[in-house]
Image (cartoon, rainbow, N blue to C red; front, side, top):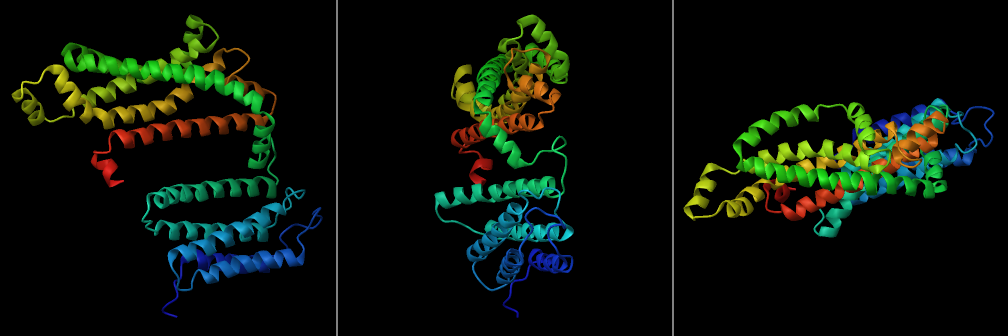
Length: 375
């Protein structure tokens, strides 16, 4: 017995399984396609076998594989049973589903213990762990909305949102082009570049630094809903007004962070550069900018989310009949909640990709920094 590896997740999963057995059936009476005894027995067998096998002495990779197959195989069978049986899930159903979730939790714990020796293995593991975590958010969301019969207008299930995305690809593509590739991208580039250029000047000119930074803090506190209508009045209903909002939102975070980064180099290093008779531009390029890179990339990552939020909110106050913000405000008025969530999902995906690209660029540029070397 001392060689067994117990875990609270596995023990709790077994207890939930036994509680589900006591409170059967899994679906309420009157279900269109009720669970057959064989299918229900198979689900219980998979969950209990995976929990018990996870206690056996074995390498973490084998244990994680057993838990992964058991948790996701049983969860897939449980979700498949909800087709045509919306609102019919019982207490036993959710107890069994929580057992699967606990096994997936245990799987992620075991995966976190692995130490791959290859770069590909490390990258795959870094993607697999958050993928399992995100998948279970969708699984629990799907089970809660369909199994408990939550009204569609309050919260549609992920399957309905995915179906809406696949059925509305041309519309979503046009919205992405209007909002992201025009307003967000152009506003982000202009705002960040102008904030960086002014920060370099402020680092050289003292009165500019002392005068701009307090204003930057004030402008950063301006509400989007107050700025957006003004920009629409100034620049019209098309994407330039949204790009102007993005510029305002991204300019001052870049300014403040870059000024702080340019001042991050130590006085000893600056004295050394003077000793070498370095010019101001040489000091900037070889000392101040490398020291400021973590601050600059921090501003770029912050702005990647601010830009998307600013452009979408700005489209609420006037836009052509295209755009992510326009679509959200229009479809929520029509009670097409699945389309609203489809736009939200696409925006979240685009923001995550944008942030990921910047993070990867940061690792490539600031590979020498302790935070990157340690990661």
